[in-house]
Every structure is written in C-alpha cells, then in structure tokens.
Image (cartoon, rainbow, N blue to C red; front, side):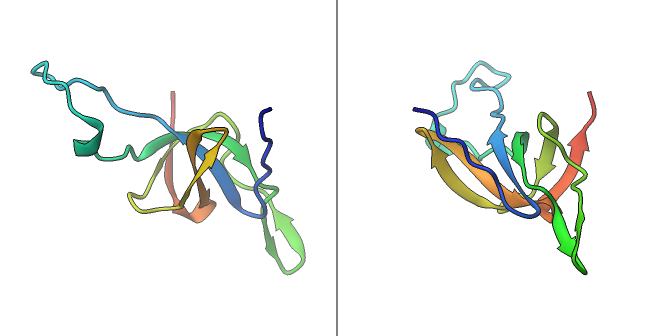
Length: 97
C-alpha cells in the first residue's frame, strides 16, 4: 500500500536524481564512496508559507528539477525509498529544460 504524504506550509518532498554509477574512465564507483546528489525532482509541494495571515504560494511545483544545498533538508523513507523534505528557502534554483 503506497503512502501519500502532503507536506505542510512551505515544505517540499524531493526525490534525489543520482549521478552516473560509472566514472568517465569506466571505473565503477561504490555507493559508500559517492556523494549524495544535490539535484532532485519535486514529488509534492505544500500550500505555501503564511505571512500576516495570507498564504503565499511557492515558486516550485510538482515535477520541477531543482538544485539544493548539500546538507539541506531531512531524509525520510517512504515505502522503502529515500526522499528528502526541505523548505523552499533551501532550494538554490530550478533547472530549466
């Protein structure tokens, strides 16, 4: 049974997009030696932050590819898959396609 999570306020749920598993020289890099990617796809978005009783919508939306800080957010597991919950202010930019 798949869990549905709705983030609150200005939080978003992100699925990390991993880099290549093999280096340019053809060497396979083990998981323990790799850094976690700082790029991800937005899976879910909260309604927005509150300011003086008004809700201000977020600039990111579901499906956007984003860049975020190396130590940003909180890692969680949803249905056995790692996800990241972070605030919109932790997003460094949206990758245009």
